Amino acid sequence: MQRILSAELPAHVGATVRLAGWVHRRRLLKSVAFLILRDAAGLAQVVVAAPAVREQVEALTEETVVEVVGTVVANPTAPAGVEVVEPTVRPLGPPAVPPPFDLYRPVLTATLPTQLDNAPTALRHPSRSAALRISAAAVSGFRATLDGQGFVEVHTPKVVASSTESGANVFALDWFGRPAYLAQSPQFYKQLMVGVFERVYEVGPVFRAEPHDTVRHLAQYTSLDVELGFVTDHRDVMAVLRGTLAGMMATVAERAGGALATLGVTTPEVPAEIPAVHFTDALKIAGAPADEPDLAPAHERALGEWALREHGSDFLFVTGYPMAKRPFYTHPDPARPAYSNGFDLLFRGVELVTGGQRLHRHVDYLAALAARGEPVEPYAGYVDAFRHGMPPHGGFAIGLERFVARLTGAANVREVTAFPRDLHRLTP
Image (cartoon, rainbow, N blue to C red; front, top):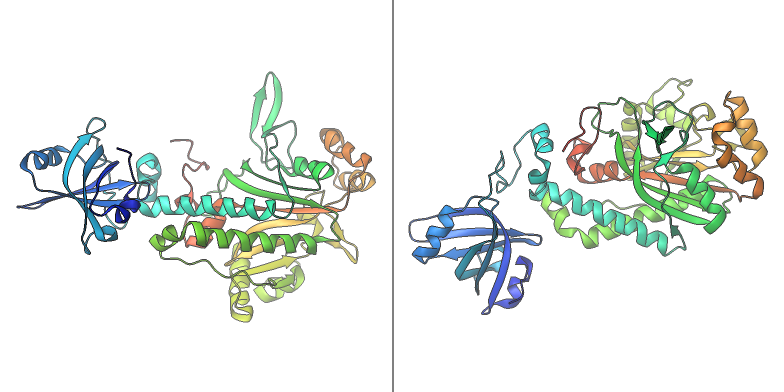
């Protein structure tokens, strides 16, 4: 008999079925016992009346893996309106050691450190697994949207010979006796692949050795990177980003509706045109000094509130960041060279995306590195490619975990990360 999932039970009323999963909970009443079985699709209620089977169920512990064979009957009070009766129950492994928290409770009450220390079991709780389902759906929507626009998925090295953005915050390692680093981003490689495919994207890990200990930063996170050629300027990149976000939201609503319902959230509308303000205007709106070189988290929150109040939008583009705060490969605004053809996208008052137009002429790269006092040699393999013809291009990167945290309202990005890596955590 082929195994079915709990969600399929309503289609099998009157039939004998085989289920398998984890003992989610047992309710032992005087005349009957209830075994709540959990599988990948949800919960199934199993009614146990036979004394011998009840004795078996009483001996089980929560999280023990079992197989159940029984008859499906309708019961409006049971999950999905059906339950399994007259069961046989067979353990598929030894009795499980219960985790240090109750997974059957509606809310996982353990502290976040306890959850992270026990991640393999904590992630089984519906609230934690729901966030990961949303994450998976978001990536699916990201890929599908870009595939539909002629983008090619690429896979670039995560061990590199030099830091991507000429910063010191990299993880150094030994590569067969030579110094190497974990990649801060696929920036250089995705730009070079524009010279091959014109439009590329990547889903992969990036590593930032920044000693942040905040609710919004991780030392390793998943980056959704995009790069496209033959752009006029950064506004073409912003248009692709807007469409990509809309596709991600639609796929999350379609494929992870149950997970959204579990967390009590809905996907926000992505406006047909996301409101945009120049960095100089953003400072005024946020009440920041006119000479402020960047936006602080408090400024981002103020801008998010402004966008929602004035435009009814959860999203806001901030364009024209000062060149001094952007990487050397950023294209300046031709009309205002002190400012960039770059942007950030704020989602509910938190920076979600950084992007913009890149330099594409070899001579401009030499000048940009010289202006910053950077030697060319560490970047020779990258910069040299621009001698061989590269189109005007640009791109962006979305932090997946931060996207899911903002979407679900999680207070800490670690709540939506399976096995977070940060300043303090390397296990499990």
